[in-house]
Image (spheres, helix red, strand yellow):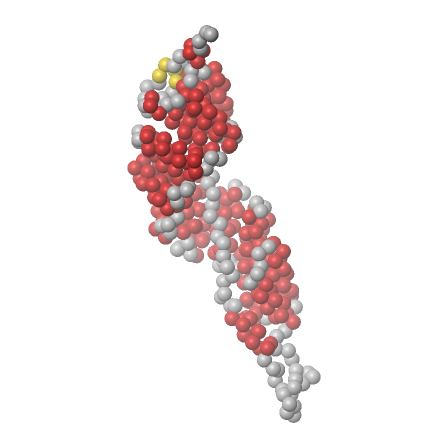
Length: 380
């Protein structure tokens, strides 16, 4: 699952004027008592702001500099103290909104620290206080998605779209979940909506490119990846994606160029080495094949990203077979089969059948017989 966009916000000033009024009242002189010509406060004059409201005012003022878990916890505690000590009316209503805001912000801090379970608890606490706080709904959806509750996450993103239909990230996040579930057409529609709302986001184009690619709309995918690269020329992943779209259309030179640029841009991006290895191992045009470099690139991809993704093992096997190392290829492809989803197993099995008959795999072209590597060895 690709990354989600988490909302980050400032304090909504819906009722912030409450404490501007309270502050003004506190600074002014209290009403004078009867016969007090000097204007001095009488002994029994009531303070302009109650102790309970003082707590809420202190919580409000702390929002100006709050940035840590402890800061937001203090705001929550001050709001709770103010409410428990008898704050009423408009200031009490504001205290509940402020407490909800602080729970949401603290949840974001927990999320930044990868503590999604605690983050989820805080987002839910925020919504218990203010169920219209769409920012907390959005954040709860992200946490639910990361914790594997796809149904709950989808419901949250649906709610955000109802509450704030112009918030592009909700459309994008819902599209990401639909894509992960295999509803590619549904994802494409959500990506379209996100791009209409926020056309300058490269990530939106990347994701829509994935959807178009999966649907076989390679020209549309290429256009999306092109746009992503235009918006962010240093996005190595967008370069790889565009290279894949070029390769799918047989534009191998452009694909090779994008892969090279991606590796130069981000030498730690395993996907860049993976696509490079696949092209050099399986390209039907021999000008773009280099079996030894393909093996090296596939091994580098595995070093960076591990071998739990079947595509990495499948690519290594294709490179080994292209070099005539069929025993190695069969070992690698068997590992790929163990990791592959059921819908991909048949394709990998076909490649295994080729390797068992000493034939290399060529993408989009007939399989090619390859001599074993030992046949190229020379005696001194």
